[in-house]
Amino acid sequence: MPISSRYDDPILEQIARDTFALFPHCHRCGKKIERFEDADVRIHVQRVVHRGSCPEDGAGTMDVGGPGGQEDGSDFPTS
Image (tube, rainbow, N blue to C red):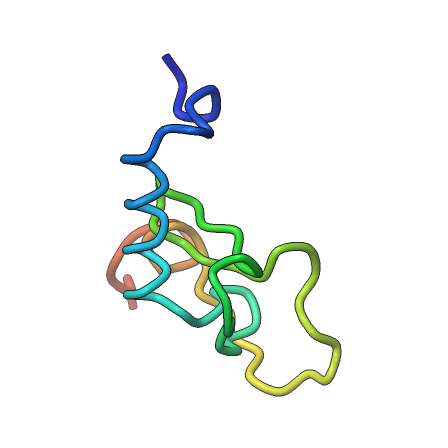
């Protein structure tokens, strides 16, 4: 059963809240997301981004690459 069909599962809700508590900054723009309700927590990759688009002021922009942090998705740079 895919996780997306378990949107009302309290265990997944707790995992999402715990992930947000550990990673409160958006992985797209780097800004802190103030409330859990404003976050879109991706459980498979433990990634948190702003729900919808990031704020437009441009401060805090960061590129974390793929799920592992690098452009190719790995955890470590190759060069």
